[in-house]
Length: 298
Image 1 (cartoon, helix red, strand yellow):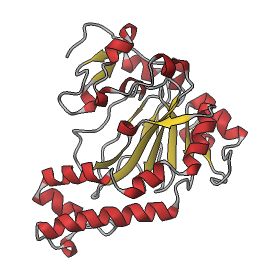
Image 2 (spheres, rainbow, N blue to C red):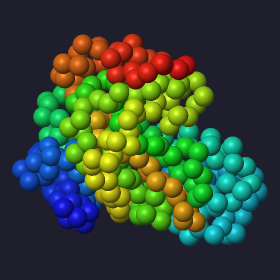
Image 3 (tube, rainbow, N blue to C red):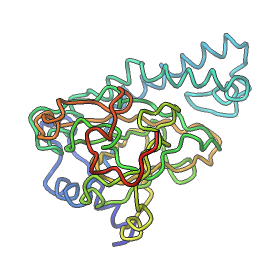
Image 4 (spheres, rainbow, N blue to C red):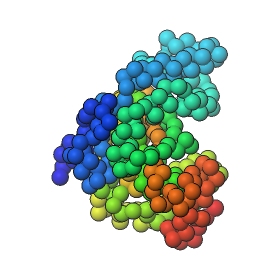
């Protein structure tokens, strides 16, 4: 199947206000490939609210640093962010920490349509959300330090092995600014062995904490493809699905929102007492020593 045909297979629309918005075709595609692209999923009003709130934060810092937004080379809601990156890069890091606290973010990730989709994808009556797995990424042009390599979500968020990530672009994403790259079908491999480099993320770069053992051989057996998406679309994918970030080679920041959901009724979740992940001081090696490959570091 070509990449275009596969993306078409993974693309789903629907009545996002319905109690069961996903049809049988979409559910079958998710079961087979471990991911879906939900078109026009997010509320337009909430998307605009996020843009307005983020623009307010950026404006406050521009004013404090006495920078003129009119000098910005970016013509959208985050106008002036490029000036802040040049003037005070650490300050932009603090904006990154702040934007995840905005009211619109919580509106987007807890909307009734989100819970309806999660109930269907996990076939559960009691889905939950992992708070420390929620955030807004700001991936800036030519900054590759924090890009996520090929990984599965599960080792970072151990709550349940029946779990789904919501990845929602807040601006249009393509290969120029770095849309997500997926390996459909890899969720069927289950949790993969990893080499542990920094078990509790003490170096504060989660992308360097774990490394999948034998990754190249695994990827050689599977198709990988970039998945462009418009602002307000949503990618949903299984916690075992292999995926990675791609670099931003555009002139503006790539804004995306991520949230992680899990099944409270899942046997692994119950056995683990709904434990969180490394951001809460949880060591993967304690819960899955059988998945630690080779000598463990850190």
